[in-house]
Image 1 (cartoon, rainbow, N blue to C red):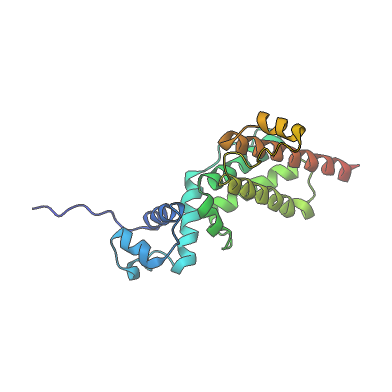
Image 2 (image 1 turned 120 degrees about the vertical axis):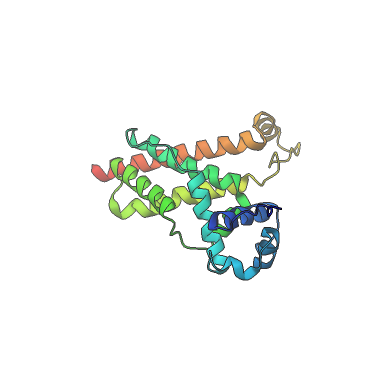
Length: 204
């Protein structure tokens, strides 16, 4: 009788199961991860270096899945918008995993390449070199902050009848996913407009 097929253990298999565990609201624990993969904890160490190694593998797998489309021929603002939107989708689809990604240094080639492309686009827009990384960090911080907002209730403001004008705004405001998408798009536009104005001022 043929032996049953067992999925081969790999960094990606480990990462995907870890993401599944974390997004279900559970803690990332090596013993739990090994048990759900049907292997011994020691087997994981052939592919990842401890808990941090698992987190790196998680980012590696997600970066490969959420690769941005080619944008090098587009205007610089469009390039930056596409790249930061790619990160935001990754984060907002995995808000609990995001909280782990923030705890380790970024060293994955695909992710670093995306940030390199963002730096090139911002440089094209006139951002001076000494402001490139802080501008990227600002955009990234906004992206993961917006992604964590996806964990919020459908509507984050309660009607209180004390301020009819505010209640009217709340009634017209989108809720749920639509609210989060609007928040992100509006915020990116505000940031990039500020970046553009700063670049123009630096050139003058």
